[in-house]
Amino acid sequence: MSTQTTTQPLQFHPSADFKNRSREALADTKLRQNFRGAMDFLRGKRSAQFPDENELENLRDLGEAVRKHALRNLPQLLEKLETQLTANGVQVHWAETAEEANAIIHGIAVGRGAKSVIKGKSMASEEIELNDYLGERGITCVESDMGEYVVQLAHEKPSHIVMPAIHKTKGDIAELFHEEIPDTPYTEDVDELIQIGRKTLRQMFVDADIGLSGVNFAIAETGTLWLVENEGNGRLSTTIPNTHIAIMGIEKVVEKLEQVIPLASLLTRSATGQAITTYFNLISGPRRPGELDGPREVHLVLLDNGRSQAFEDAELRATLQCIRCGACMNHCPVYARLGGHAYGTVYPGPIGQIISPHLLGLDDTRDLPTASSLCGACAEVCPVRIPIPQLLIRLRTEAQRNPGEAVAHRLKGQGASYSLGEQLVWKFWTGAYAHPSLHRIFRWLATRLRAFAPKQQMGWTRFRTPLQPAERSLHDLMAERKGNRL
Image 1 (tube, one colour):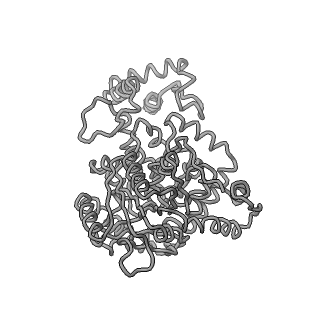
Image 2 (tube, helix red, strand yellow):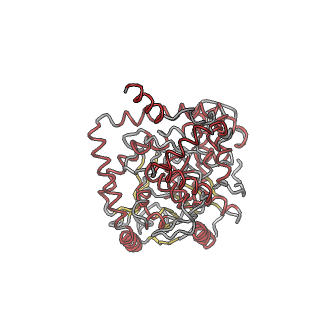
Image 3 (cartoon, one colour):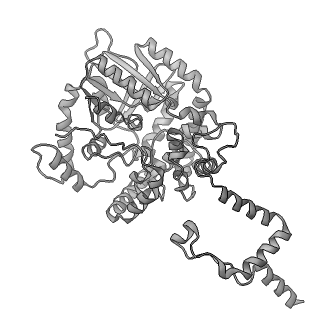
């Protein structure tokens, strides 16, 4: 079986390529058919899980309140979490950047002479490109989540935060397993494919030196890490190896165990249309004396990586309410047609459009906030009521803001899309409409000089006919009609 990792940077593609990748995705008929069918299926499953509209809205209110409460008290809750975890025997590490997080995890692995890591699902580890980082240093990382395992074999990145291989058909996976896993016959039987993957991964749980996982929620009061999953791979990767390393974004903390209940209900039903996932894993420390299983040491890496930037701004802080269900992606008309890889970031779709600028900076993500029709479908289904369209508008504003303008909370890459010429045009337009005399002059000139309207009008004429002023303005026509009536 091939488990080598690629060394090319896959987390991020230059923002300038986003439009080209979007065109390629739109031209890929098979990709569009795969995503359209998958999105329709997921939307239907979610809808079936919320037959009572009042129950859904009340649950969303509660979920939003829990997340907002946690974010208002984030510094204190993180300190409390560290204190409680330490008392439970968990070693807590703080990482301000992706580089620091990778170095911490690598240091733990080197200190234990580790050569292999088995991973449960973790978007935070995808965010920091941990597989590639460790692979370049001689430590093999194998994904144990079936979807993640598929895209790893294909040397790709996930195209969805909950269902990583959603862009692939059973035929694609059958061919991949046949080519990459030795002595594997070609079969498109889904049950057989699952069994092939399980059989291949089973021994790796036993042989791995380190198990690594993400964290869905961390409870400060008890020092507990909460993981939800369906395959059992998360439980195996966090209990069989002697060392368990968990990595989570700093925003995933909540105060009390009871507050996770509504979030878990919203998460599973919004993500995969399940009333509850197969496994709920609560980890509060390493193996105790007399216990027969479990890791002998547990580490938690708390990752910032730009989250503090969102936290500092009262409006943008709502970005951190996200519980990573993917519902916004499933209902987004843009994502449903492009797929995840076109975005070029670990977090695609609406949630990626609002969180990636904090993780990577607006210089590298300036086109993402504009890849939205602002239809509001994402906000309508968000289980914790993140006002995504409002945040997209704010990020567009920051990308267009003068780079030298002093603001209370400066975003990394402020002014990435700033254009002096465009700003002058808008000032002229604003002035023309703010002063009646200027507007009359502008209207008169526009109708008389209509023949000189440019044939190429930036992005507008890429898919539309050129705009051209009418021979006579509406104001003139109404004035003439009024005169005729008199």
